[in-house]
Length: 303
Length: 210
Image (cartoon, rainbow over all chains, first blue to last red; front, top):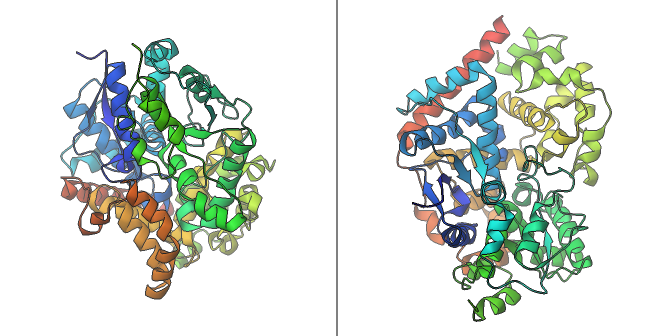
């Protein structure tokens, strides 16, 4: 039996061929090393994300998340739900909070769930993967598995919004969370605690609908990383990763900049530091290649 | 009588009450003390995207400026960064109130029709709930073709390098156009959401009548 077991809510962007498929691949490798067992909630559905608000309304949005709770309770009783995506985590946690605080919402939700033949008896705990790493395993346990420290690599820890607000990771400040910097240090790389854009919004869904507004924000995020001498950016959020990585070409055209900085997931850094290959860390999933990490991943591990 | 005329009639001269009863988290609006921390914390407000930033909207609601508030493009500039929520000294759930006012304006048909984020928001929800999971390719295509075919092709061309990069990295699958990821129990999802809309509608109507 694995040391830690959870009901897993991967979310739409993590699916095969989707925008964060490299996130999921690296999380799977990371969990193997850490002896964490994730069991996918059967037939899970989209959380609705924040951007669905025009049509979602209040109850339909919570019912959508509650369906995942009900499926988790039915198939994986007693297990906490773990999400890797910031939006999935936020959406599910918000639903948990609202249903817990309103009997009316709870009974309305139960009534709607009946239509899908489902029910909820207990409210599950909703955790983000970084919470699991920090709180259930701890930095010491995470560091134990490092066999290939990312020595000399300077990495800007970009936390973004939704893993940080409104819930955040317990004990961290909304304005200057430090856990990601600690994770960067943990894998043997050099962190940039004074990176002042670490909680700036990447524009979220506006990157699609109003790109010029989002790209103005992304420009600040990338520019500051360069100013601090970062070789790459690391983030815990799929939308932050995609937005900050894939629009650098368009930003260069718009602003005459020469951005070309890789944007990684914490899980990819960990897999490489844990001795995994480029494939294990899904480095082939980068639009802007992380050459430095590829080189490190190609090195022999002394065990 | 349209839905809009009906509520306008019912709440005549009391727009604050209308917001309190019909908008998610609307009962918080009266708690605003006009400090402006929300407006100063909003990333898109820094780009002057908001015609009326949150604290201004709150005062306009109290002043009964119904037409101006509901037809404003302001709320649609919310990026859901939740900065305003965590900084508000009176703990107003501002992000949710903004989404709530936007949703209400959209429901009444008063939201600006061509506002791109309003369009994308509706598109996202339909995309996600159609099969239970988001189809990223169809979502992007739907947005590009919002202003017709010619503009759609232009938009697609402008995004070509971004899309190619993703395809090469195996993070965008062109086959998604012909199917893609989905939930097994779509029927259950649709039935459950239909019920949820019914319940929500009847609760709002009851408030209006009461």
